[in-house]
Structure formats: C-alpha cells, structure tokens
Image 1 (cartoon, rainbow, N blue to C red):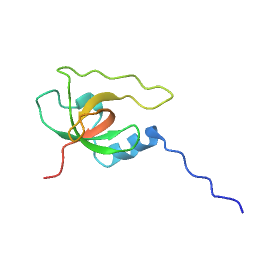
Image 2 (cartoon, rainbow, N blue to C red):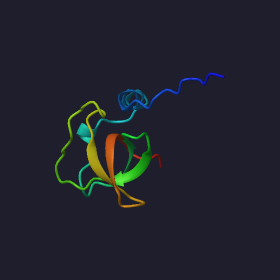
Image 3 (cartoon, rainbow, N blue to C red):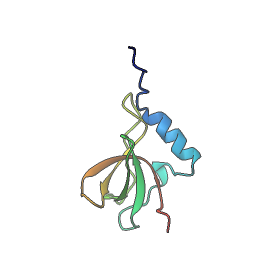
Length: 90
C-alpha cells in the first residue's frame, strides 16, 4: 500500500499566509517594554512573547527560513525565532 506524500512544513509559505491574514512583519515588532504580543515561529507555533531588545535586530533569510528575530516566550521563558507578529485579540 502506498502512503500519501506528507507536505513538508514551509516557513516561507507560512509567513506569506500569515501576512495575508493580517499579521505584521518583524520589521515593525514592538521593542522591549512595549508589551506582550503573539508571534508565529519558524516551526509554525503561535505563542505569546515579548521582545528582549531595545532595537530591532533580525537574522537574514536563508535556506532554513525567512527573516526572523529572537523573542522570549511568556509562558516558558524560552527563546523563539519569530517570523511574524500581531497584537492578541482582546
């Protein structure tokens, strides 16, 4: 029996779909002290996070994924690689 081919996770496609749904690029991400926001990570997770930096720094896009920035998860305190962000719905 043949198995169906599983579509591989594509961070570039996830970013494009998120931007189409109203998410923002990391170029406009809030800085440290400006609040907590939702982030879409390279792995496809959506988490509450805050920025640890007073200036916007980003890692360039490469074969691993699109342009991304490090943020800190609110729940666990772990670093996340964010590719998009938005304010949480009230």
